[in-house]
Structure formats: C-alpha cells, structure tokens
Picture 1: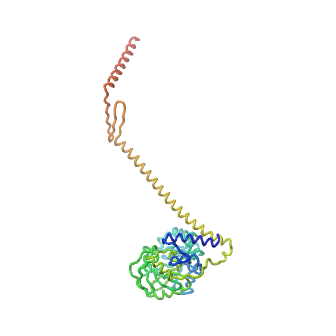
Picture 2: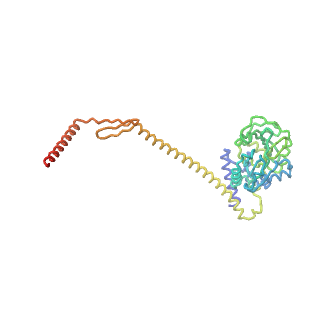
Picture 3: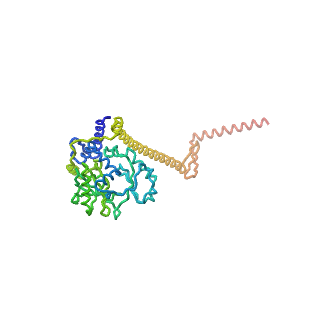
Length: 408
C-alpha cells in the first residue's frame, strides 16, 4: 500500500466514524467546525514535536526546558514492562500511567488493598499495540510512541478533590478553560472564558456531565494562562491541562485532538465558534522521516499495519458480540432445560395426586395415594354370556369328575 492509498483508507475510516458519532458529514476539503479541523490536523499535519509531547514521559523534558521542572508532578519511576515494577518500593499512594494512553491510569490511594496481579495484567493489556490511539482513531501523534509505564506522585486538594483545568489554545492563544470536577465518580465540567466568566455550553458533552455550580477563580489563574500561552506557542492547536494544589501549578498533559475530534458541542453552534478560532496551516505536512522509514519495505509494512490493526479491532468486536450471543443462547438453553425439568416434575407430582387404571371389569383410581376400586356394571348380553360361560365351565368340571370316578 502506498502513502496515498494509506491516506485514502484513513480518510474513509475517519469519515465513517465521524458521521456515526456526530451525525453530519465530514468536510475535509473546506472544514468549518472545530471537530472537522481536528480531523484535518490528524490526517494532514504530522509534527514530530506533537509525538514527543503526547508521550507522558518525554513531555517532561519539553516542559522542563520551556517553563521549568517545578511545574511537573514528581516522577517516582519509569519501566518498559509491568513485570519490572517493584511494588514494595512504591509509596502507599501513587498513580500508574501508560505513556501513550488516554484514561489508561491506575490511581492508588491505599497500596495495601491493591491487587498487584490484576494491575500488571491491566498494564500489559494497555501496552498492546492495538490499544495505541493511532490504530483506533488515527490520532497520529501517538503512532510512534514507544510504550512505557510511569509512576507519579499522588496529588489531591485539601478537600480530597482534584480540579482539572483544561485550557483550549488556538494558534498559540488561550481562549477558554474547561474545569472538570469529581473526576473519579461523576466527571462533571463547566467552561469559563479567559476573564473567568462562566459559559453556557459544553465542549464534548458525551464525556462528562454539566456542572451547575460555580468554581472560584484560582489565585494563580493569570500565571496559568501565561504558562499555557508559552506552551501553546509551539503548536497549531493544543489543550493544556493543569492541576492546582495549594496554589502550585502542575502540568497534567498536552492534548492535540480534544476527544479525538468527535466531541459533541451543546449547543452545536459552539462547534462552529471553536472552528472559527482555529486557523489551519496552508500546507499539509504528512508523515515525517525517521531512520526506519528510509527502508521502503518497512515503510510499506507500517502503512499496511493501519489496515491490519483496524481489521483486528473489528474482529475483536465481532468476537465479543459472538461470545455475548453464545452466552445468551447458553442461558436460554439452560432456562429451557430448567422449564422442561420443572414440567416433568410437575407431571410426576400430578401422578401422585391423581391417577387411574382401566381393566375389563373394573376401574382403579388413586387420589392422594388412596386406592378406589370400582367394578364395571355389565349389560344383559354380557351377563347372559357370563352365565353361559359359567355353566359350560361347570359342566366341564362335572364331566371330568365323572371320568375320574369310572377310572377308580
């Protein structure tokens, strides 16, 4: 598969996903909405710095260089394999993350109740190539990340909460801040502008519920916007996520494709308003060269892998559906067998309550185990035949007796 064929394949898949998720056709030739422009960037703008900064481990180097190490959550450890983690050396509270993941986090508040075996298995699953976001949604920045596990210090506010301040930046300028609260259980969100005026819309309503309360403007808000401005100046579009603990700012992550460019805006007009804020580059920048791309065979395999992994994920879904149907049929079969057994038992129980037998001259009826015998009433013809039979039998017996007497 050539680069052009691979690109056409990805365009078709993304268009299908987009229409199914958002309900309108994706226009890549003249994108207008924010979500359309995110799809354009996914397909046609491949910046190697985005890959570095989408990597939750390597981004630390970038942040340290441009704004300072003090804005990083303290790092406890980094590993290539889950089996290499020495849980005995970890503190009682910590957070494990896969560096290429979105939502692939394990928050540990009490290590004593952590199931280490399940944790290792979960991390192994997240590190499989099919769980790289590129191969499910073609978010290019994740494609060339080498998977690792990082462990960061557990942080929370004094009230036990953790507010997530997500700063939407367009062409290097912060415009809106989405604050997510109650991240573990309900994940509610509310949006403010850069003057901390509350807005009445949601940017990606399928991922969280609307928070109706008011969030107090952080004391370090201006500094947070300044940091977001510095960071976003390196990118066309980025969402810079921060946490604030005791007025100290910590970077959460950099997100280049908010909700994969398929987040529903409510009302939908804000999809267009966000789109107006984002100016796309005039030229496309598709795939960048690295040493292993110089080999045409490996490059061909890399492009083909897109289709293979996409097909594999479809097969996984189909297999899951088949397993679900099989389990449902098994349950139905078991239910039918139970019903048949119940009916059989009911019949047997009925026999004990009531049964009857019929012979030539009588009925025998059993009711609750009591035996009732009823002789049949004979008709006159039957009585005459019976009397004649008895007479013949009597004469035969008398004849046999007389013969016996003469012999003696």
